[in-house]
Image (cartoon, rainbow, N blue to C red; front, side, top):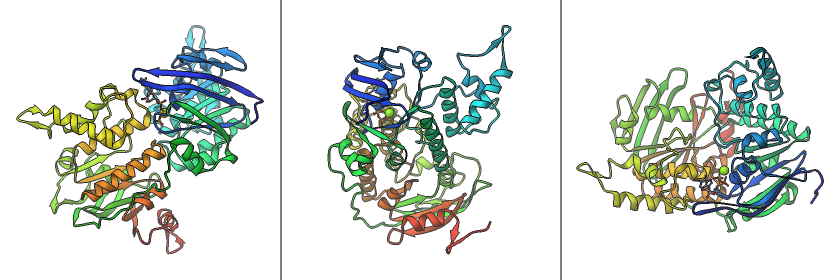
Length: 504
Ligand SMILES: Nc1ncnc2c1ncn2[C@@H]1O[C@H](COP(=O)(O)OP(=O)(O)OP(=O)(O)O)[C@@H](O)[C@H]1O
Ligand SMILES: [Mg+2]
């Protein structure tokens, strides 16, 4: 493999945290003008290595060479001024500040003793232009979508003229169209001779964007490959080291009685007369493009958003003016797409996160049965294969994908009869995905009704008994497993009716 133009080389890097060997003697090198994808299961050590390179963590052992010179950054700022920028898995912009203030944080332009906003805004506008973000630089960060905040982060990297731009799961929560935009910018950056490190669990993306791929497994370096010398199956094998030929579980149960009925659910300007039913033991998929109104439907149903019209019946009983509390009491669980919003408390232990919502169910006369709570939470740790040295570990110390699993466990502990999963496998590696599919299938087998929202077509087709297709807040149709194909779903989702584009 080509070794010219090596910008950065990491040799023999090891790093441990209490109870965890996150990295063990790994090697890694980056070449200019390439997109370098880093892959591995949840907890494989990807983010940790990148944080070492970006000056956030210090390695226990090993050396990093930047342009052949040994470096050891102890602060992110040092890495940044030396050409290394990292865009984190969990963005943390200062939301009450403007784009300009975020871009110039720590390197404000001062003129005659005062901040020169005019000049900073001008420069910001230029930078925003380079990443194709057409917003006034004075816009507050909190007004921006996740994708737009990411673009600001990239603009910031450009303002430091970063040679290495690390993107840790940048597409985990952005729309398909925004992914296209991100890719266009990534390619531009690469053509300028920069190196982009790209971490993602989305296979189809990786093959669109990667030049080189490095695989980690359990904190160890497996290898680096040119994108044309490896295929998807090969990659999966390298990552998980076991056969995953059957990703989707076989399903045997037949759906039973209707447990929940939703009639003409409407929220002005958001969702329009959405009706569906779900049966015990059934997996009902919700497909559509990002922004189709699937999450909005579930938010409304669960009582998270404003007033609605329409009817919701659970086991025949109508729920008037739903609130999350009423819905939980009626046996509904909702694993939302946003794990921070789903109440993952980063400073609490894994165990407390899992049991906290179930405490009242585990109590008798005001006394919590902690023995049972511990047993049940241990069981979900096993079932979901949550990778943590102990249940007392703080949630913030787990890898991104394992945090996602805690949220799943928290809801499953409450033993709901209807469970809504919104993008449950986002940020989750292929091996763990298949475990989550099995778990969902076994819940259906137990008679639970499952609502499964996903933007990944193969998983909707692989898992669901029936698929509702939505677009722009409207239900476009419903397909049975036997008739559903990717093409049919897409044409429904894209407003095509009977082969003709709808003119709205
Ligand atoms: N600050 C920390 N304290 C304790 N353990 C940590 C810390 N950061 C990471 N770890 C542990 O190190 C291991 C590697 O984590 P890392 O975040 O690098 O994984 P990852 O490959 O990025 O996974 P994912 O795909 O889920 O994001 C995990 O077992 C994780 O729990
Ligand atoms: Mg990570």
